[in-house]
Every structure is written in C-alpha cells, then in structure tokens.
Length: 234
Image 1 (tube, rainbow, N blue to C red):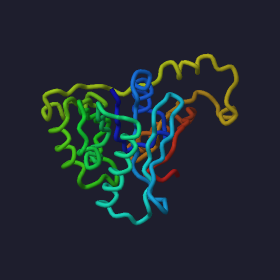
Image 2 (cartoon, rainbow, N blue to C red):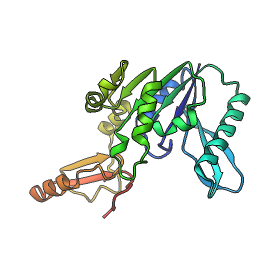
Image 3 (cartoon, one colour):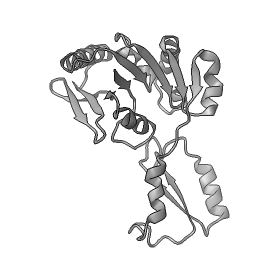
Image 4 (cartoon, helix red, strand yellow):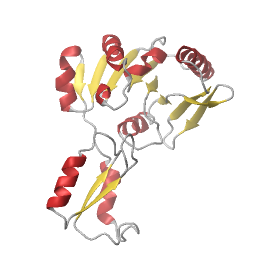
C-alpha cells in the first residue's frame, strides 16, 4: 500500500503536522508528498527528491504563464508517468487541501482521507473556490480528521466518519532543550525571563495581545522564531 499526499505546504518550509505524520508513515509505506507546482521551467518536469526519512517529495515544475487548466493536465501526465514507473497501484489519497481535488480527483484510491489541518477559507488570500472544493471533498472522503477540537465542532455535522486529531509537537526533539549546556549565540545578550514562540509568524498571530503584554511586563523578553508570511515583519 502506498500513500499519496496532496499538500499546499512545502515539505522544507517548517517542520509541522505533515512532517510529523508522513515521516512516521514512511517507516511502513512508500509515501509520495505532492507539492503545488512551481512556474519556473522552460519545459515541464517532475522533481522527485527524498527526505532523510524516506518520503518522496514530488514538485511539478511548469513553464511560466501556464494557464490553470493546462497546468492540471500537465501535472496529471507527470504524475501518471512517475507512478507507472514506480509501479504504484493500491494507494491511499491523503488531502491536506481541498484545492488539490482538481489534481487527485481522477485517481482511484482504496481510501480517501481529508486531513483538515486549518480553516483554509479564513486565511488571507484564500482561493475563492476553497469552500466549494471542501464540500466536494467531504462527499468523496472515506474518513476526515481535524487538526483541533474547534475545527471538529465546526465540521462534525458535515461527515459521518470524522474525528478530532489535534496537532502536537515533537516531544523527543524539544526535550533536548532541557539538556542544553551552552546558550545560543543569538540569545546570550537577551535577559531573562524569556517567553518563546516557535512556528510560522503570519496574519493569525495576535499581535495586539503580544504588544499588550509587552507593555504590561516590559521586564519580560519575547523571542519569536520562525518565517514571516503574509504579515509585515516589522
């Protein structure tokens, strides 16, 4: 059995829910993680790299200016050729985004999973069709997971086989912090106490809350670690 994941997140962006799950799945199955296309090629091709855990990371590279309909056709051709070469037959389709249904809808999986990590329609610059595509995916999916309990409460009436599956942290990784003997160079000069945040810094961050507690407790220091997306770094 192979697992084919359709994702809106780059594998090498930040290490979070998809990496937690699929790195573990790769111990038992072949895992193919399909990213959204990059429009940077003179001629279309499919990049296939492998993570240290053994996950196949598939990135379609398409010519700049390729229209949406043609892009889907080319991606189908690239993926079909790759899966034929690798003898992919029985497989699970695992969707992290309903927008990928346009690409994966022609496949014939033995099981379709919708892993609803976030309410994507609430994101800044969300595709207008995301709600319609999600409704289609909910009809198609055999099982649905939600990345938290609030998402589960909001969607539990939309599917008969839906379960809360909260995201978490890598306990083994972060436990290493308790054995650190030497402070990082970029934090040595920052006084204690320190309050840390690790993750994507985007439009969902409550900057008003952060500013308020910083003003109320100026003796505390706040360290935010992570990439900035769709938000002014200032």
